[in-house]
Image 1 (cartoon, one colour):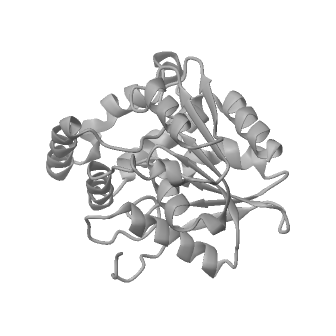
Image 2: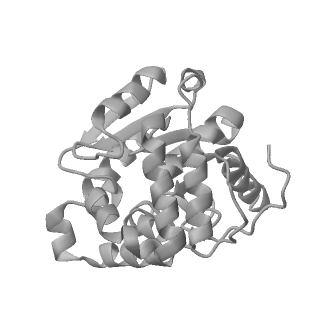
Length: 261
């Protein structure tokens, strides 16, 4: 458990005051901006809490390395300060990793868990790739990774169109503090929740894109198999940031899940 002072976490809270709360947790090198299509859609029936993970967006950038337990405690601290008891937690990619830590440590605070386009462990064979990225951003900033990341996150036709959400996500990527990026990558490099997944009893939706190389369908299927009673869906044609490129489909699938509870 981390004993450093809690970093200041930037958040937005929208929607009807008495409605159930959905917390949205973003990917590495993004911010609450990537959830714009969801905030607009879900705030008719839910209270929407978006936050920028430590080291990202408008949140404080503590020195690293970070841990997922520490990032989960940031969320818990934010909920306590806002006097929010239980939430539907939705995390994509790194956000899903934070959600797993919450489900292990504080299941009493979760009404449901949505794990979108995420993983539960980092294959040691890919650690060298992450180490290379750390070296690159420390010497040249995140711009060096922009094109390769956007290719993994979005399909080519979507990138060619450059809709407003794409432009906003690209800008946020470039503005992510290097120290925050590196701190989170160091947490991702140590990720291994395989032995604990089976302990999750929170109602869970596992969701990915058919063309997501970061969270391939077999990886998501394995998560689904290990979390008893979980639901599993694949968005055809989607890459990593499925919520932003295919919002209509993504929103409908998540809404169906939430209504089924």
